[in-house]
Image 1: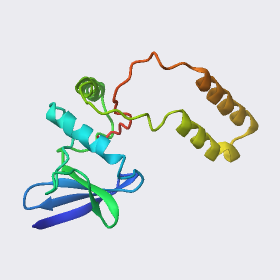
Image 2: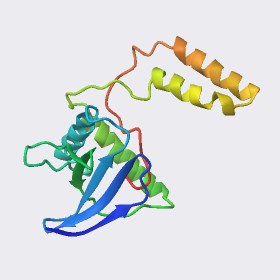
Image 3: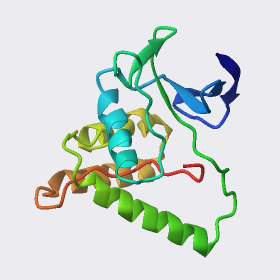
Image 4: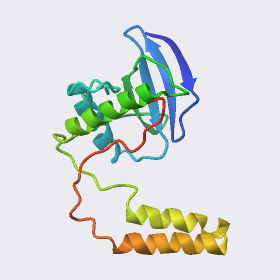
Length: 172
């Protein structure tokens, strides 16, 4: 039985709600940009991390034992709600705790069996650059083009690979 729900204003890509049914407190996310075929990677990774002791939202499976559903014709998921609030002025102690947690998260992620190419890799960078060219001065355009050319020549094949949390905000 639904007791309460309210919108979360701080999201930038998704529509999120705090929902309180009779069984606890959760976060409902309607995915606005990512496609349904992309989401199992992320949701299963969250479950993997939670199962390895990382204090992150745990996806809640539906009656078909799936983490991903649909609501209002949008992909949707329900995850556990973590306690706490945003730290607007983090101290060195807060930063140390986040660093330790990220290190533990990356170690736990080493055993995650799925792989996904970086969605913010070279192809994305070129698409993003194309969207901003018209707003740049001549010097800025040249600087951006030089950086793209430089990155195109890099051989990144020898670098280690793994899942990382590349979307860290003060509220997560």
